[in-house]
Image (cartoon, rainbow, N blue to C red; front, top):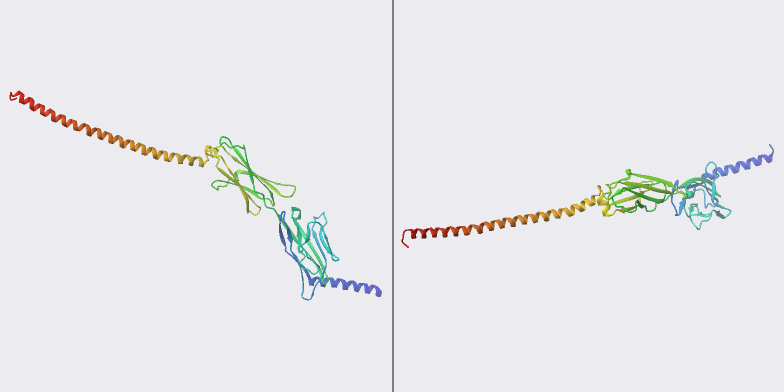
Amino acid sequence: MNMASIGILFLFFIVIRAQTEGKSFVKVECKTGNVGQYGQQSMLDCVVTTSEEVKEPKITVVAWKKKGSEDALDETLLVFHKGKTTGQPGYRFAESSWNDRNMNVSLLITNTTMVNSGDYKCSVMTDSGDDITETSLRVTAKYNKPTIRSIPVNITGREDVTLICSSVGGYPKGRLRWFDEHNKEWTASSEMEAEQTNDGLFKLSSKLSLLKNSIFSKYTCVVFNSSGGKEDEVTLEIPDTAASEGHGGEKGSDQISKIVAPVVVIGSLIVGLLLALLIHRRRSQRDHQEVPTCELDAEQGGLVETYKEHGNGTV
């Protein structure tokens, strides 16, 4: 091995050692998991830290990439190199005034969609060493306010009814639940379907079948997210005539009770009054008849005495 070869080998060893030692002085620290909201800004938090030996480090390269699948290459999103920043639309450094002395290399996604969900890789090179680390983004979307429609549209209470509740624009897959006016749950009697649309979001639809003899006055459909949190609800009010005709329509029974109870009370009072008047009248008639009888007896007694006097020849 000649001197030239030894020199090259030594130089190579020095470079490798410098890079290896430099990695111990520089480290990229990222938040392990990040959560982004669909249609809003999302940020992947990453900062560069250095050891005490490093004074005023300068960043020479930053590269943000989204990891591809096994069959796809990583997608380059944002690069800083030779004092210039280039990247795809919708991606930039979190700090708008970022420069090579700023150790905050966080990535900002300006309009989050479902395609942004996944794993990311941040590579940083400085004049004191370099490092690579990974982080991830989980995208969620809030479901829109549910809507309810009925089949048939006009509910009369004389036929079976199907209520259909729908909510769209959510992620991950959520759930629709049914409650009646007494907050009793009827979800077990319903059928729900979840369809993923082209934008990656879910459309939820739930059908609740009602028999004509078991219709309540109100039904509420509530949408819950994948974590079980309530997001929004809608209430359908059934016409009073339809709810009262159903066997299970307690509102109709309550209304009937409210009407019947006063009628019974008033009727009882009227009957009592009539009885009292009747008794009073009978007593009055009896008292009225007793007086003439006494007078008649007295008069008859007088007549007898007179007759006796005439019979004796004294008159």
